[in-house]
Each structure stands twice: as C-alpha cells, then as structure tokens.
Length: 308
Ligand code: ADP
Ligand code: MG
Image (tube, rainbow, N blue to C red; front, side, top):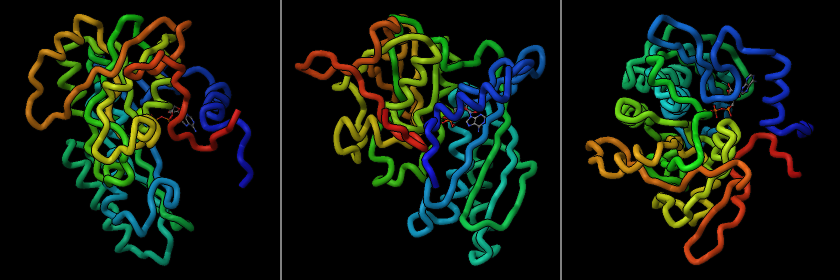
C-alpha cells in the first residue's frame, strides 16, 4: 500500500473539512468522543474505535477473548475521557472463514465481559467474513452538562496529571488487559472542575500535543515526575510506547493542591502531577533534573506517520 502523504492527523483534518460542521452536535471531530444534545440536564457522547489483526493485535499473542475485551475497553477509555457514563454499544466484526464461529463466539464473550463490568448494553452490530480479524465497537453514553470535560479547557498555570503509570504496555500485556479509567474520571469530575482531559492511546509524546492544540496552550513536562511503569525501559519508552489508556488531565492550581492532599480510595489508580500548562508561545517542553528545559519532540504512535 502506498503511504498516504497526509499522515493520520492530516487525514482526519481533511475528513473534518469534507464532512462539514458538527451542528447541531456540540462537539464533532477532534475530541475523544462527539458530544450531542440529549435532554435538559445531560449530553450524549458517541465514540467508535476499530481493532485490526496485525495492526493492534496478533493472533499468536492475544486470545479471542482478550481481543473482544480490548475492542470494548478502548471505547470505554474515550468515554471516560469525557467524564461520561457509557450506556449502549454496537459491535461489528469481520472474521476469516478459517477461524470459524467458535473464534467469533469467544471474541464476543470478551466484549460481553467488558460491557457487563461497566454496565453497557450491547444493542446491535454487523457480522462479515473478511481476510483478517477486524472488530469495531461504537459506544453511546451520557454526561451531566456541568460535568462534561473536553480536551480544550486547559489554561496557563493549570497543573497536568496522569492516572496510573506509563510505558511498557506491550511487554506487560497492559495493552490487552487495561482497565478503562471510568471510576477515576467520575471520582475527579464529582470533586473538581476538570479543565481538560483526554485518554492516552498514542503515548504522552503524541497525545499531549493534541490536548495543547485543542486548548491553545503550551506545557512543561517534569521528566523526573513521570510515573514510569515497571515495564517502561526509560523515559522515552514511557512517553512513546503508547497504549497506556491512562487519563491525562489539567486542574487549576487550587484543585491540584486539593487532589494531592486527598486520599485516593482503594481500587482506584493513583494520580501524579507531571507538569504544568503554559502559554502557547512557550511551546511544549520537557524538563529533566539537572538539565535545561528542552523542546519535547512529538513522538508516540501515529498510523501513516509522515516524516517531515
Ligand atoms: P482517539 O485516539 O481518542 O480514539 P483518534 O485519534 O482516533 O481519537 O481520532 C481523533 C478524532 O478524529 C476523534 O474525534 C475521531 O472521532 C475523529 N476521527 C478519526 N477518524 C475519523 C474518520 N475516518 N472520520 C471522521 N472522524 C474521524
Ligand atoms: Mg481518546
């Protein structure tokens, strides 16, 4: 296949122009989920994500149940990023004839496990034969209007936090077994006015740029403060491996002090302050102990990466 010259994000920008404005949706392309009108007090959120054999998983490394589980979990992670509650899902699959229906049923069991754990009802889908295993899930959820969190609300002076730890998601198997951070998002949104939030799917080294773009701000990351997972080889692996499925969020200084002094209930991932939001003109920087802050090079995972 010829590499398209636009890159993943360029392609999405082109699609956005082609598809036109989101109205009457409040938020269309560009956040973790679309935000749609619902009723007087709530918005609906809608998101979809697809997993492809050879791209997101390999059949010799992931069980059908894990693949199904992950297909639902990546969508729930995007719902968590809006501080919303997932409610309904549709599931579309492409299954190679050689794998037969037992593979499909085991994969469906993984989808159902994840759905049940988070109170999601599966209400439809589509089934096809295909050359490779493909599974695409779409999830609909809701959020109280005053609790909605976008990527776009961060302001200079805000503190940046992440949940859990970063890096080594492939060697540790976390990329298959991660828990979407819905409970953490609700814990936060019920106590704080979260300024901006997104989930980390491509790696901090890519996703931070998306959050800063939408918020029209810069950031300084404190390299020494990043919560590296046991399986992260080094700082660069924590920043660029991707598939962490943790939340990246910004809080005002007052809220961030309150969060740091709170005791996090058992069963929730921890929260770590990793830096702060600055003016856009300062760019996006990495500060490491004993070194001058340097430009944070955009990395992470990007389908159709274009080298500039
Ligand atoms: P995430 O990693 O949070 O799932 P993506 O990076 O996949 O987000 O997508 C970024 C934004 O672009 C999202 O708002 C998504 O809905 C939108 N998007 C991605 N691909 C397409 C497409 N083919 N057509 C329309 N919108 C798209
Ligand atoms: Mg996302």
